[in-house]
View 1 (cartoon, each protein chain N blue to C red):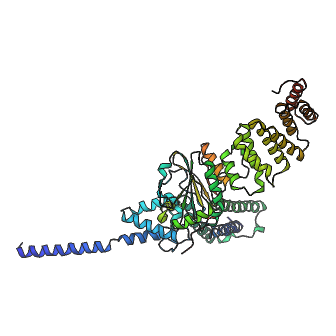
View 2: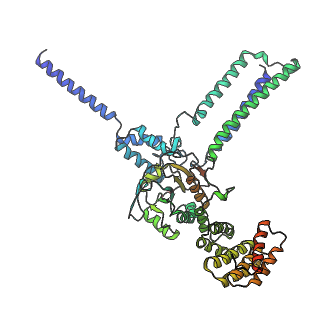
View 3: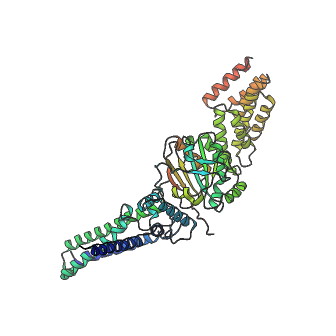
Amino acid sequence: MSERTRNLLSITAIVLLTVILVVVVASSPTEADRVEHLGTQIKCPVCQGESIANSPAPMARDMMALVSERVAEGASDTEIIDELLSAYSGAVLLDPPASGATLVLWVAPLVALATGASIIVWWRRHPGSDASPEAEPQSRSRSRTLVGGLVLAGAFAVVVIVAGFFLQDREGPAAGVANLEGQDLSEVSNETLEAVVAANLDDPQISGMRLALAERYYEIGDYSSAFPHYLAVAEAAGASNPEVVTALVRLGWMAWDGNGEVETAIGLFDQALIIDSDSTTAMFLKGQVLWCGAGERNAAADLFSDVLADPELSEDSKALVGSSFEAVTRGEPCA
Amino acid sequence: MSGRWLRWAGLGIALGTVVLAVVLASRFGGDPALVDSPLIGQPAPAFDLTTLDGGDEVALEDLRGDIVVINFFASWCLQCRAEHADLVASSDAFGEDDVTFVQIGYQESPSESLRYLEQAGTSQWTKYLADPGSRTAIAYGVFGIPETFFIDPDGVVVGKIIGESDAFTLGATIDAIKRGERPGQAVTGDTQQAPDR
């Protein structure tokens, strides 16, 4: 091979390589092309059937910016799509893959088409089969009616299953998150009740929950936490009489038991007895404070006696009040 | 097979097609937000955001060990306004109890969110954060707001409320998480999209 030929071949090779390189580079998608292409595959989550590339919604613009950033960082298309799928599931793709839930939508038309075609072909090959039913024996006619009914029922069943599947999705998943309806309050924490009370201070219906919360604190001897709730119930315009009486009685007992305030306690018991003169709890606790705090044994004995006269008093209460009555009438110091 | 059989089959298929068409058609115009979040049961997407006033940075990783309640909100969202007092009350009630509320501004400037919070009120325990470019909202698969996510002390997403929350729902869900339950997802109402500007 002469030198001239070699030079010619070299130049030709260089030109060819340059042309190939230019073609390859020119045909390679730019980053902007990739972003645009990805954007047309991703559904704008806040729009109806629009891609993020075509939607003017702020969220779509933010998602396009994210895609653009990921492309610039060198992420593959699959990585970018997977990142969005991990947050939005298949709902973020304009063409969901034919798997799982969407498989039904892909397959159903094909099955329907094949079934319809089969029926038409069979019908054309058996034109004489459309005989008059009157000419058939009655038993065959009955069995065909049965088969027809089963086919109809089957079709309905398929429709109901498919409809149920889609309607379930439409309604959203089952409400596993706590709901006020039918909730067992014994499983609800004090913090939850505090939050509900704080968020509903203007609601006249809140007194019941507030009283329940106060009772929890009272039962564990946390008077300082119980006090503001009892006070609020006692002053609430929307509270029922039994709720107010309970609150006043508890406030009275806490005033005595917690702070040794006899007059305040007696005053609160009296307020409760004005609302409900038959409140045996108010009478008994007032008797206890008169006996233990003011040394008024006779007044206390009278109150205990009134309580014991209540025919609806439980056996446990009867035993408790009875022992106090006996002790105070014997002149013993209060327990 | 007879003509009668074919008539039954044809009738069944036709009826089924009509009913299916009605069912599918009824989905057009439906709320696209009503889908299962794939995040439930998965590690919560990490974030490292600045507070709305730009003063501090808060990373989800820093809150590991707490139950974290993440709420996406905006001043233009009516349901967010309706639930705000309950979020504040819940954050106050659980503030000393290893529960951290995080409210992230969605599709508005930090100054707009701050102006709104000045009027609506805040909890001293809640972290109020800005989300430039909606990166955290996208990572959490937010469709519209309000959306509220519950993350357990191990950093796993265990609950989500789509729509307005109330103090009872928030508190009882936190109670359930404390008992080791995974409450899952619930739809309590509509969500709102950002208005075009």
